[in-house]
Length: 250
Image 1 (cartoon, one colour):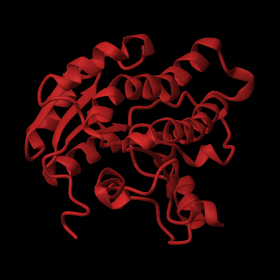
Image 2 (cartoon, one colour):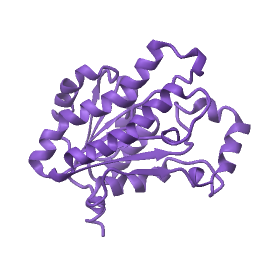
Image 3 (spheres, helix red, strand yellow):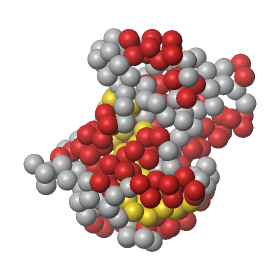
Image 4 (cartoon, helix red, strand yellow):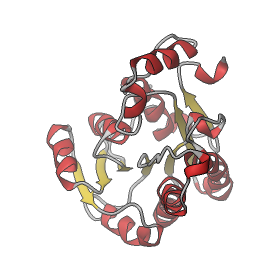
């Protein structure tokens, strides 16, 4: 079973590794024996992650907001250990602009980072995965892939797109041994969800909405990530796994 769910010796590329979910999953993969390349804009925060992580790690400080630069980012991500076997697209942004306040700049920035960058980075890394006959792509969907939240027009549009993009990636690449799936977290305490957890009443209301009765912790995402990163999920592709404590079931 350890071989089935194992990632030892695999090379993983994790975007958004400087904080939040990306950082937690980069640490989890490294702790499980993968060689992990953490990508993010803030070099100091990346170095802080690297100093705390176990195993073999490398960092690449880069601007992940420009889809046109993803071929170059893929080359830099492949330099430390070789071409990645696993890509986790955890970087993201939520401008939280109400519909009547959405700006073109905010809209475009949200779609670029949340939707365009994951696709074009994956596209740049897929040829090497195809040559190996093995690859794992994990995108990040959201509760807003299925639900509408206040102030979530741009974010929801991008995350709805992630759901369909993931299915299309699976259709395009899975015959080459490359699976593409998405995790859709519920409410987890991160920089992105700071406004939610800064409001104890709102955080408690979200917890009560789940079937389990609490909000998520980073540990709740480790198992699903290892599953989707390993041979255990070889016949799972094009799927969105909601890790939300049953929030969307009620």
